[in-house]
Image (cartoon, rainbow, N blue to C red; front, side):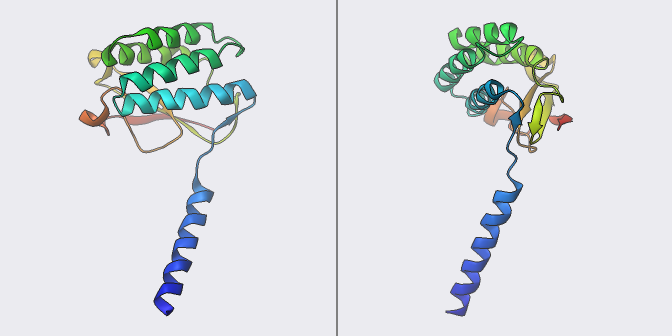
Length: 158
């Protein structure tokens, strides 16, 4: 009985510690919060090498950017990602999209949480490419399972 109580106490403590350390990213602009959620789904679909889910997430990301100031270039690239017929095309466009997205994700727009700007030197035909994540551990959207941990955090935005 005592072991059960100790185990339950440990589980409760573990859950509360996890809840306190979860990184929730929010922006000053509520529309950007919605866009960030769609961006994250798109990035995660690329990590999992799921072309169809990337397609859907890219189109949702494109729509979410409609009323975000200065998002025209990102919106166009998200639409192209949604129209791309292969995962390889989507990943190439994702590199371009992140270059354009850097203008929207700046220290002045973030109201809470931390965004990690990650970089993989081998992505984009060895030209290198970066992406954004709310998670510090590297999960590479350019290679998925083939090279999941390839890359490094290049910038921390708070």
